[in-house]
Image 1: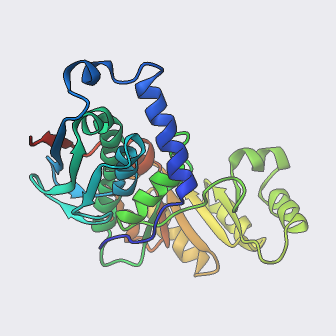
Image 2 (image 1 turned 30 degrees about the vertical axis):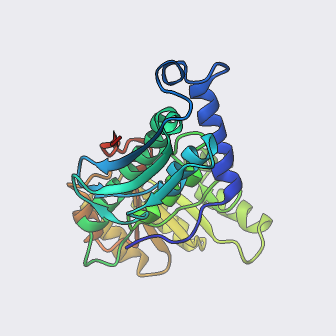
Length: 284
């Protein structure tokens, strides 16, 4: 599977400019400028050193082209593609200074996002054959949410809400502030339009029953064991979308999916996914 839809240019340009400003500072790359002639030309490739799934090629290319638009960058393996050690992801041809000065920022984006895609793929692969979807959360790195959610899609997962602005999700502190499940749901229904779905978090089967009776559209089952999740599916009987969340791992995700929940959400795939090991090799 490859992902063909482009990321918004404004999002890419802003992130790339900020990352390069952080790395180059006011003086620029003093090491490369001191050692590499201005007119030197070269070639390089970015290769995978570990098996995984690619994400972030568009951003990596943007980094090199931001430093110098004359550099030629060809994507050999697009976002969503599987990689194994030795596979070439991007080929570069142009000013040597550009290749060397942009290398780390490009690899930071590409390695991190490919790590997110790979972690997502591992969960998706573990639940294959069930009807359960793997989704991400808002537990993302500041400034990188759009990219990380893109990487989740590259790994075969789906996106939860992007922010506080695009979905209603009533969590435990909202419930406490409203005096309970019923109060929170009634307040939301009295305020929102008929086109907006309402999700609410519950910790117990008693809370689940209350949320169902008040007509919640989506119910997050927070940190429930598999036996409790099975009971929750039996109680809900399809009246609401059920989302399991909390301490999701590759080792336990299959058992959770087999309880019959509709969705499993994981913050780990964005906030703690290991970087996929990639490297840039300068050829000449």
